[in-house]
Length: 257
Image 1 (cartoon, rainbow, N blue to C red):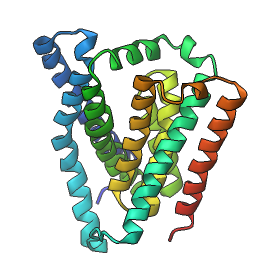
Image 2 (image 1 turned 135 degrees about the vertical axis):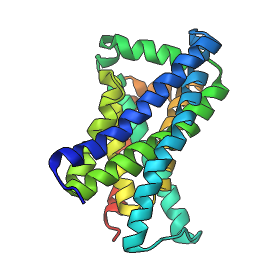
Image 3 (image 1 turned 90 degrees about the vertical axis):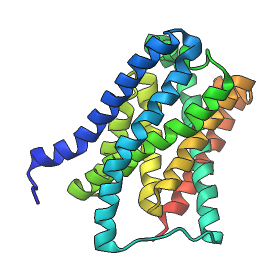
């Protein structure tokens, strides 16, 4: 087996390249078909993410088969421990997602980032159905397969757990292009990689990702907990409570063997 540094980097980078080539081609043809209007943006994003899943699954499946050859296969047992893990993943994703969003909203970063404002406007210009199906289901599955299932696992194999946690989070953040989304995605990416590491199940990272995106969509569409976006006493207190709740769940995962 090749173990040169260049080979290792290539093994990590080229699945990301394939993901974005497939996504970009799909986006191009969908734009020709559906138009470039903001009202179809989320539908196009959802379909692009769906188009990447078979290609990413190919790499993920190969890596998983190799791991199972060495370590054996671990099935899912729907017992109390499993459902507690699901609940913890959901709570961690939702609470830390809200806390990070709130902290960013309380700073001048959003006003200073034209890229984020443009992306955010397009994201919420279509129907809520596409926001829920795309952002809260299809996109989390596609991104977790790539960034945690393939990128994190390969970084861990070649460089160890800590570099993999940090590296995969930074890569995930960078791929979101603008500064606001970079900060949010890097923190959430670190959490999701940690959840995967401590549970051994990619599905738990998917659940955490879905929860983080779901509360973001619901808060924007309904105005739910809007007070917490502002640096008032109530807003800061709520943000601290969410951060503490998320950290508490992370600490429980940390104690797992």
